[in-house]
Amino acid sequence: MSKSTTEPFRVTCTLLDGRLNSADGLLYLDSILYHAWFVKYAPHVLEGLSIDDHPPHFGLPLRQLDDGRYAASCGFYTQYEQDVEYWTKKPNFTDAGVDDYLDTGKAAKINTGAGEFRAYRVPCIIRLVGPIEFYGYGTIDKIAELLSGIASIGKKPAMGWGAVVEWNVEPWPDDWSTYSPKYGLMRPMPIDEGEQDEKYVIRDCAVKPPSWKIGNWKTCYVPEVAMLV
Image (cartoon, rainbow, N blue to C red; front, side, top):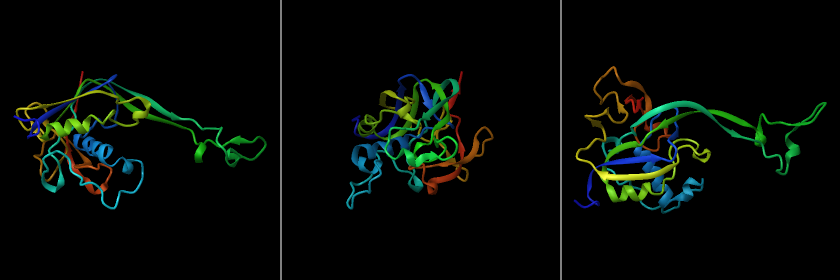
């Protein structure tokens, strides 16, 4: 079968050091591909610029389901450890205009509690994980092409978390994008569509990209994606 054929597939993502920054542990293949599409075809949008009057036609190489959802699972992985690390941002005192941020009083000092020179120390949940498996139904060669432009996953990649060393996309015998005999539920499923099962957490989450858009959120059954050891 040609790799350009629409078919079931598995994606395996291997991280450089296994450290993933994710509070809830959920990674969405459709959201990763959504971001990858803009990286490849419309990077100016990611830089905060307006989309062109005639943007390229948007489309992911995935089978599209009801309500605009895609045939793509969450990522499943073995989790070895979980810890809290911090990302920090220190003020740049060499910038021009620093006097605007001086507190007046007995001793002038830089105000690092607000404004441009605010200092941050934010806790993050860091998971030490093995290879991450995603499943879906789509066009393998196009999916591999898009993923080749993604160098990291998870939050705050500039801190070194979630660095990807390899993407591997391969055919899979069955469509595991929604349910599988190995993991069960493969992605958040709206409660009015899924079968009630007490083992699944119920909470609001995105059912399609972009995941930040509130209109894409529904109350769902959510799978447990981390296999703890």
